[in-house]
Image 1 (spheres, rainbow, N blue to C red):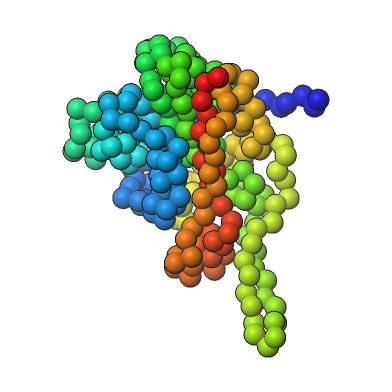
Image 2: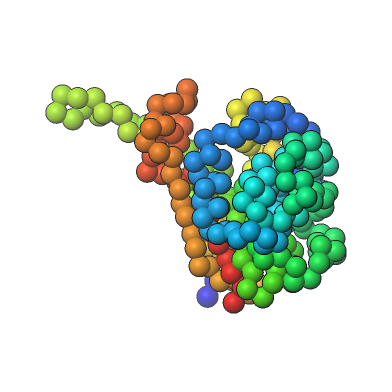
Length: 272
């Protein structure tokens, strides 16, 4: 059996928080009220896999400005929401005007095991990390700590940009061809480097003022890191944008025009 590479890039540990502090306010101004990925893909799939019950204790990791935090609280869950960006947490607090008794925001680095353990042993019914793992330089400290924070039957749901179709070397392409006298345009994705973990710089939203780090990890590496620390996979979704959004984007190679290709992956892990 081939030895699994490390999922972590510790040499970048001190760099990502500064980038997100610079981006937080701009990012929240741009998509704080949602976008197609959040509305149609990430949040509905995460809700289905979380299957929250009123009163459950949930740890929201990399909460950003708290959009999904507030959505979970509206469903009756009790949320402890953390982010390593002080500016994001400040925005989250400012935006939270309802269910304030159900939400606690904290500035906390999810890769810091000692800090994470201050949240309380075996406290949470569920943990969720919404589009955060690919932004974290080190994920194994978090995944190793979660079994200590979750209750014995706890679950962990995470979403990431799809490691196959939406990563550093994936390229959106289009082709045109003549079929029975009609010009057909077909969009798709090519991938040239998938199987190894690597770091690249990029943007999540067109026009953002500074690039962010992305940490590509193939699906096997993400899942095997969870398996190593006592989790089992028991739910997965690869949601796609609905046909009605086709043509909506001003970008011809947008995922809006690829309704059969999933740009995100959402998984549920449970403790064995």
